[in-house]
Image (tube, rainbow, N blue to C red; front, side):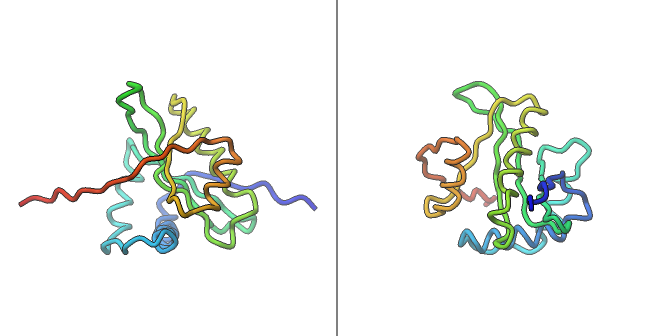
Length: 156
């Protein structure tokens, strides 16, 4: 029997609690530090603004459960003097992997880029995440070595 076609759709305001759960799973998976409380309150206005600059696509299991997400924003590449779609996060809960949801999310991200008039997508993944690297390589994506920095610049 054929597996059902994966469903990927834009996030809606009522998805915010589940999206925040997935974000916390993703943070733990990537061995990152916990984030300050109030994530939903900070994220909701950005995600559901009248003119959003952030897009989140959700992957659903055949039963309709939200099992993953891809978060994207347009970014300007100075050297190329053009915008591209930056995929900040792609995450699938552990039980949802290996069923075509990741590929469906990536296809939806590519469609979003085309809809926005952007000709490519860029993202990063931790160098220890070999499963993700194999997945992206199978898609035909190419990796670029770089080190990512963060520099807090809070007021004095």
